[in-house]
Image (cartoon, rainbow, N blue to C red; front, side):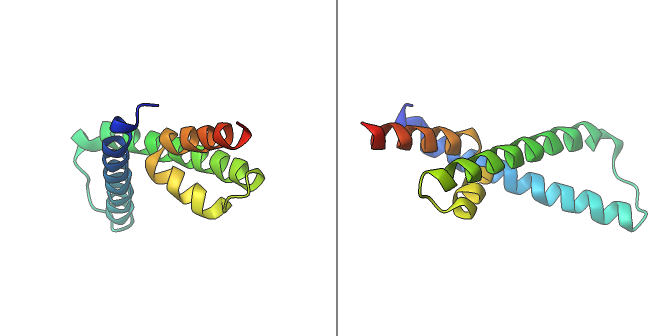
Length: 100
């Protein structure tokens, strides 16, 4: 992993996932209040849902792996949820450093 790219990727990922969460809250609020949502946003909603589900699955995997690596599973799961695959890669590279 090239370390100089990790920090910007993490920042962008955190911003996008946080935006996706707020977009989903917006969607739920408008649906519950029987308000019409712009039809142009439907593709964006599907994209953000895919991203949220993908990051959630990665968080579950990271929490599971972290429990075997003497890391705090909840902390690592939340971290990986927001940064995505980078969190998993860091966990796996941490394993390589410990085994060396």
